[in-house]
Length: 101
Image 1: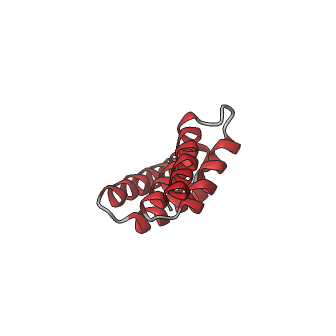
Image 2: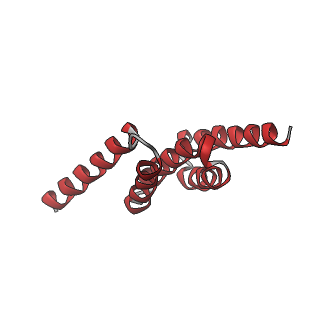
């Protein structure tokens, strides 16, 4: 029962974090995504880390986004296609910014 309550709690936190992110509250979303990743890596952590990366991107913090994506890649067998793609897009965006500056 306690385990199912814990899973439910992390599901609610993920839903709230997603709502914050969609509502433009990226920093608040990032805090919740970080909390879920710390509490429940095995079941919800990958989604939480990807959410943390998105919230960091929305906040203009590409360093945190890269760290979060690298954690997902390191902790999944296939490297996680979404994380690999997002990391490549961040790298491309930083090159574009440097060329136009």
